Every structure is written in structure tokens, then in C-alpha cells.
Amino acid sequence: EQLPYLGSVIKEVLRVQPPVFHVIRVAKEDDVLPSGVFIPKGTQVFLSIFSIHHNPKVWGPTVDEFRPERCEDPDLPDRLGLCGWMPFVAGKRNCIGKDFAMGELLMSVAMIIRRLEVAFADGQAAAVNRVGLVVRPRDPLRFVFRQRSH
Image 1 (cartoon, helix red, strand yellow):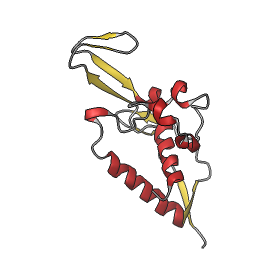
Image 2 (cartoon, helix red, strand yellow):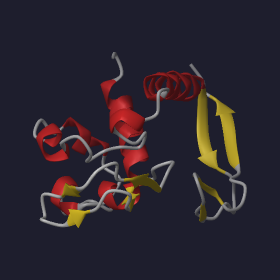
Image 3 (cartoon, rainbow, N blue to C red):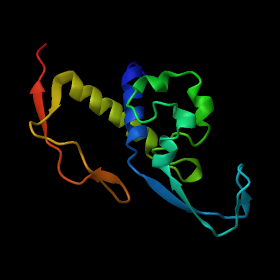
Image 4 (cartoon, rainbow, N blue to C red):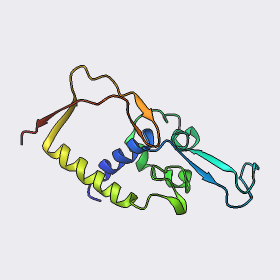
């Protein structure tokens, strides 16, 4: 709670590069989407979390830019609704460890950047992702860590 900007950075990382790109759910009953599309019971529904997180109607014209400040927009929660930001999915089948994961991310990143300077190693190319159940780099990423001088 004492590091709101770091929280915004982590939320923006999870928006731009969600750990899970998509999920599949099965409709338990007939339903009609707000768009008018009918979904019959038993239909497999593919949810693209990546697409949801890159929707310019929600995130604005700078959707492809890394901008942690967007998380501080007081109107953002209204635009997000229940499913505009869902790196841990949403609803009854969301990740039960999401609060723990967010707390662990905040603490870990805060401890690392407090003590160390982190940079890509010389010659490190941009990551090329491999998408499966979770997203991960195709090749190992190399970093250089240097002790911060206090």
C-alpha cells in the first residue's frame, strides 16, 4: 500500500504481457451476450485475455504503450467493469492465489530494486514469447545485477 506506483507498474506489466493469454470455458446454460449473440448451453467459449488487455475502448489510444500511469486514472474501474483486466481470470474460477501472487510480486520487486540495479546483459535481444498454457520466453533472458551504492 505504501508503493502505489510500483503496484501500477506491476499491473501494467500484467496487462501488456498477461501470464495466461487465453482460457476456455463451457457455457453451463443458454445465454445471450450484450451484443445479442446467442451462446447455447455446452458451447466452448474462448476468452482472449491478451485481446481484452489490448482493447483501445478500455485502455485508450496508447493501448500498445507501457504506461503505468494509466492505472491511476480514476475513471479506469468504470471502463474495466468486471473483466477488463484479468491476468488471474475473473469470476468463480479465478486464481485463488491472486492476492498472494500480487503481494509476493510487490515485495519481491521492491526488495530487488532497493538493493540491485538490473539491466539486460550486453547483446540480449528482445524476448520472443512462446505461448502455451502460460507465456514464457522462447530463449533464456540474460540480466546483469549490480549492487546499488547507498
